[in-house]
Amino acid sequence: MSEPVLQVKGLKTYYYTEEGVVPAVDGLDFEVEPGETFAIVGESGCGKSVTSLSILRLIPSPPGKIIDGEIIYHGQDLVKKSEREMRSIRGNDISMIFQEPMTSLNPVFTVGQQIGESFRFHQQMGKAEMLKKSIEMLRLASRSRNTSSTIIQTSSPAVCASAL
Image 1: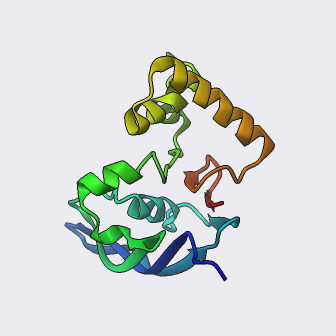
Image 2: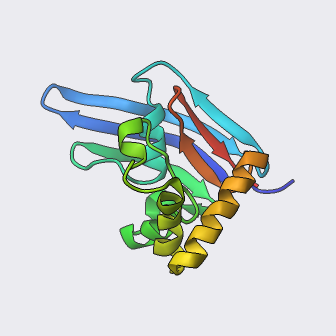
C-alpha cells in the first residue's frame, strides 16, 4: 500500500480575538491517497477555508495560529517548514483557488496568463513556454480532474484535494 499524498492529523487552528479564543478547526484528521479525490463539504463558517489556509500555512497571524497537529505532505510536516520552504511548495505543489470570484481571476489578464504566472514564478519559465504550459494544463483539466496534487477551494462550499 502506498503512502498518502496528504495526511492531516489532529489539526487545530484557533483565532485569538478580544472576545476570546475561537477554535476554527479543532482536531481535524484526514488522508488523501494517490489517485483519490477528497472533498470537505459543510455550512458557511464550518472551517473549510481555514483548513485549506492551514495546509498552505496562510493563516493570518495574529489573530490566527495553528496550535496543534501535523500536515504531512509527501512525508514532510508542513507545520515545521520555514516560510521560505513553504513559498517553494505553494503554487508549485499545492495551490488554492480562493472562493471569492472577484478576487480569483483578474479580468484584465487572460486565463492563460494567470495560470502561467505560477509557472513563471516557481519554474522560471519564459513567456512563450509559460503560455504553452498553461494551454497544456487547461487541456489536461478538461480531460481529467486528477492532473496534479492540488488543494482547491471551489465557489461551492467544498474543498477538494486531488492527487496522482
